[in-house]
Image (cartoon, rainbow over all chains, first blue to last red; front, side):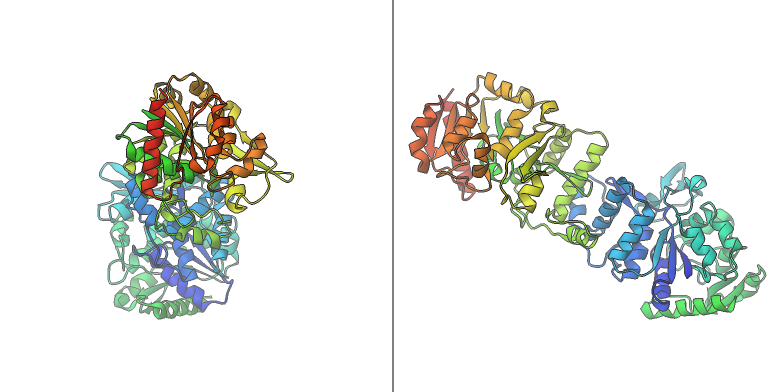
Length: 310
Length: 310
């Protein structure tokens, strides 16, 4: 069993590569749920859905997430009813949220619902929410703490963030099989997701950091920073909130003590000595994923590198 | 103000005729809600939606109800998730149910939500649920009491019904403006909806029968039975549950004491003496509505007839 820690669209690409590379039923993906939101009373888990859809091969809506070729009839109608519709939920995507919300209201856990959705879409990986409890990323913009999707989707992550917090994280227990899966993993891969928005919430769930620190399995991280900046999104900009540079080295420092190896892009070769100085081994390669072949190639290199650290 | 009592698709046609015939803001439609159902945690009010969509000119899905030209992406996806999808909810239609459910959960009344939906779709009639409380039509089929939609949609109303009841009706209060609107109405029209499935629930809400009996305004009913049978649906077959014939005369007897006049089809001319024997005046005309022109024509005749009974 390989365990991947993952957020949304960017990280899901490498997770897809891992899924394609590994034998069926040997990948466990622990997914950030601090981006979850309520929309019209529905429980939406964007990162869980992105991972599930991506592994199922049905991802890719007009906004870069959601389901490929989805329609937007429901959203258009909600707009007529005066509902703010900047969160672009497609019709088939809506079914996922409806199904999830209905089962959660009946008392099922997010873990159980996520497993059902993945099974229905034919995904042979274990996709786990980081927790079955409610955690919500909030960002301080000006004098206001705003919700993650308000920041990320509505304001297009273009406003300066003063601080970040994960509401509910102190009381959040890991979903039931997260810690056992980390303990028995052959390797742990922190994929190239946004360090502060996607990975830190997972690492901050009670017990996860300790389990990662304690496992004897090799732990590697793939840098989302290439050539001193994030490949996409606000990951780089947010690094200054933890007083670290927006570089592979900065990410290595953020994960220090939890990783044995770091995969960085060839353009960041000059950072190798500094990262090694943290006691972290480095694989320097082409870390950009332009297409499906890149995803599988990078995943193969990541797994080979992790095994070499045993 | 003209008050119409109405159920779903069939009655909505005449209600549309009334709406087109009357000046704006002078029609009040009291609608059956005993067909309401829960689907994936959503509150669906089929008759309220059919009336609203019909008056807004957007009615007409593949199943004869819902929204014209609607898609079914969400339903198809729910099917993949193992949800029974015999209740064919379209994507844009789903938005109505989502919006309603979300507002009801926030504490708004069905009356308030219905008014918002109608206003958003540009409908200038007052559409009222018969009650803001929960009433559910149940039918005895064999040894089982089944839900209305199970009977009507899933089993295509093709199974023999032994008895009918309206769960919750004893405690149901009329929605706030139902009784005042009946009291100040210039005329009350019971449209050609299914007597036992659509009209009797409305009449059985506490106070409605008394308000109809007490009003000084003319009260007329349009027979849904033409040539000894219902124009569509199981209305005729169900009449035997109240030991009445499936005819205009049977419907007149069911509404006896609550109506001053009955509109029947020319083919049922021979029933005029019997209906008059109940103390009910009769207008004999072409009671079938094949197209929009028929709806307006019949509505005009109904209103003229009602005014003649003042």
